[in-house]
Image (cartoon, rainbow, N blue to C red):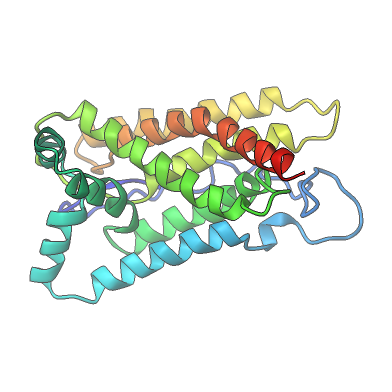
Length: 259
C-alpha cells in the first residue's frame, strides 16, 4: 500500500499483510462479535456495502484513467492528482472546488496495476472489520464511505503540509486506507468479547503499521528506492484514529433519536 508520486512509475509492494497474524482473525464473525457461534461465515468472506462502494469507485477511477490516451491522462493528473503548490494556490485564491477535486480525486487514481492491487488488498482486509464497527444502524455504509474519504483528505493535507511549494504529484488511496486501518484497530477493541485482552495486540499492530508505512516508506523514498508518499500514510492514520470514534458515536445518537 503506497500513495504513488505520479510520474515516477514505481509502486510499493511490501505492506499488504500487516494485519496478518495480528488482529485479522476469523474469530471476528459476521455477528459483529469475536468468537460468535452459529456457523456463520467469517466477515472477511463478505463484502459490506460501504467497502463495496469504495472498491467500485477505486476500480472505476483506475479503469477510466487507464482508458484514455497519454495527453488526456496528463490532463486528469493536472486536475485530480494532489500537487501541494497548486493546492496552496487554490486555497489562497478561494478556489475551493479545484482544491477539493485534488483532495478527493487523487484517492481514486493509481500509478499502475500493482499499486491498485496492493491498496485493494489492504482495504479488503481492514475494511470489513472497520465497517462492522459502524453496524447496527441503517447508515453504516454511508458513514464508512464518508470516513474513507475524510481520511484520504487528511492524508492529502498532511502530504501538502510536509511538502509546501512542491510540484510533486501524488495519487492513490493509501492515505484513506491508512485511516481505515485505524478504524479496524478501534473496531477490534469494540467488537471484542467482554474480558478479552485486545489492547496489546492493537498497540502492536499500530506500531508495526507506523514503522512499515511511515518509517520504512520514508527511508525508501530518501534512498530513491520507491517514491512513497509516507506523509499521506501518517496523516490518514492519525485522521482515522481521531474520526472513527466520532463516527461510531454519530450512529449511536442517530439510533437514539430515531427511538
